[in-house]
Structure formats: C-alpha cells, structure tokens
Amino acid sequence: MLYRTPDLDDADLRTLDEVEVMRQELRLLLSSTRRWTTQLRRNLTARAIAGSNTIEGYAATVDDVEALMTGEEPLDTSDATRRELEGYQRAMTYIQALSDAGEEFRYDVGLLNGLHFMIQEHHPLKRPGRLRKNSVYVSSPEDELVPIYTAPDSRDVPALMDELVNWLNSGDLGAHVHVRASMAHLNLVKIHPWADGNGRMSRALSTLVFSREALMPPEFSSIEEWLGQGQNTYAYYAVLNETGGPDWSPGADTSSWVKFCLTGHHVQAQQAKRRIDLYSRAWIALVEAAGETGLDERVAVALLPAFTGGRVRRPVYQIDAELSVQQSTRDIRQMVRLGWLEQHGEARGRFYTAGPRTLPLRETIRRSTEPFVYPYRR
Image (cartoon, rainbow, N blue to C red):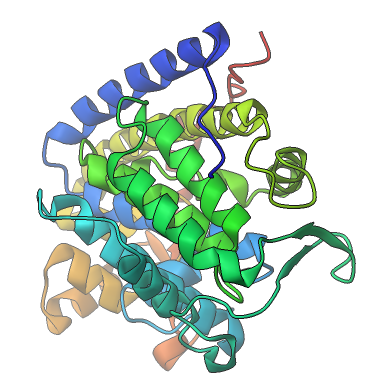
C-alpha cells in the first residue's frame, strides 16, 4: 500500500487553476524562437541542480553548475561537490530527453535504478543502482545523529517499488500532473529504496513526471530551486516528517504535503515569468546599446548572463553564439576594451563579469521587487 492522493479542497483547486494559467502564459512566451531561450533553460536547470544538491549539503553556485553543464571547470566548487553535481546533471539530462520518448515509454524499476546509478556512481560502496539490503534512517537536518524517519524494512522494498511503478504507469491518471508529481516524490522518498541518494532521486522523479507531460520544458516545472532555499528546506523536512510521522505510514493524510508542493509550483511559476520578462527586456536593451558602440547584436549572448549577475566564459559564449574560437575571442576582447565586460583571472580560470557600460542598464531594466503571492495565505 502506498501513500494515497488526497481529495483536493477549494484552495487546492484554485491554486492549480492559477498555476495552469501561468503555465499557459509561459508556453506562449516561449513559443517564439528567441536567442536567449537556451541560456534561460540552462540557467533554470542549473538552479534546480544546485538547489537539489544544496538540500543534501553539497552547496555550489549556479555559475559553477552552468560551467559543468557546458564542459567547463567550476571555479569555486570542491572536487567532492563537483562529482555530486555531475552525477545529478547526467540524470537530469536523461530525464529531459525522455520528454519525447513516445508512447513506448514505461516506468520500471530498471529505469529508476539506472537514474540512481547516474546520481550515485561515484559512491560504489553505497550500491548505486541497486535496491538496499539493509535498514536506513533519515537524520535530522539539525543533528545527523538523531533519526527522524525509519524507512520500510528492506525485504518490503521490492514489492513497494513494483507497486509504485504500477501506479506511475496507470494510477490516478486523471489527477493533475502537479499532484501526481508530488505524490511520486512523496512515495519514493518514504520508501527510501536505496542506501543513499533517495532525496535527490525523489525530486528527480517528480521532474520526470513533468517531463513526460511534454507540454512545456520540465525545467520550467521543477521546484528544486525553491526547495533548496533555506527556509523552504526546513519546511520541506518538516512537512515530510508531519506526513506519516517517524515511520512508514501509508494510511496517513497527505493533504499538507500536496499543499506544500503546490505552493512551491505556484511561486516557481511566478519566478519563471519574472525571469522571462527580465531576459526579454534585457536582451532588447543590450542589443540596442551594444550596437551603438559598433558591436554586432550577437554579443548580447555574452552580455545577458553578465547583466543578470553571472560569469561569462569565452568557450561558453562560443557555443551559445555558434562562433569559431577566433571570432569569439575577438568579440570578448572588444567587449572588454569597450567596457561592456570586465576580465578576471588567467588561463582556464579566466572569466568575465559586467563592465562599467553594462552596469547602468541594470538601473533601467530592473528586476521585479514585488513580493511573491503565496496561494494559501489569503
């Protein structure tokens, strides 16, 4: 028996309607081809990867995650954290690719074990890609020596995983995708089928459920960035503990869990809309302003991440703008000479940030400072 999908109340239905309206708006905003869309999607994926790993204690900057995604060396991340990020990135890349796998796609334990192996391959002693043989406990985020949850007996795990896979393929198919993703997340993290990496796998499974919907890129649906933010991480542990208590209790009420996840989706959708608006307005302003200094509009591909506070790497600009090494090098030098970018570091550690010409544009193209709307606080 799994944790059951709860009946939704009026507040839940209103929240889902509002999220759906925002998703429709996002689809329209993304329907036209824009040169910055690829950069935004990569940035959102990097934020999800950073957020999910931060929950597990592997903190990394979004810049370093983006660097790894493009084959560059991270500048501020330890080797241990880099291995964690690389594993999760592999799994997320495959999950996003599965969005167009077609009707032949089926969930099965082998798929979930394979994703787990991608995430945990560098921990061979923890049996990556294989169900656990021993008992596992979830420790308190405040004190790792204090267990707050005891997972089901390892002998029950294969049957529970089969039940979960059957549900993923055919259970509650009429439920809204946000609710199904939330329940997939809850059941997998409560089963805790592997020796380690269960939290990240549960969040990855939630994203996979969205990816299979294929109505919009899954990186616009993940709440991993939101979950990785300090106060939300503590609330995440609290609601997981509240739902079912300290051991496997599938008869428990799951309403609070679903409300928590729907809040995350509501806020994350607001954040995605704000970022699309910011990227769109910044791109137009950067193309116009750079053109006035004699630069081709393609340089906005480099100026946009600098404008939003990120680091620019010459090889990444080359890839994003589809240039040769020589042309990308010339462009970067021009942007530095004209004050659009500022250089830092040397050799492979070299990167660029917003220069004195870029900074004033931030005063005219401001981010939204309106507080987010929390759907259950009305």
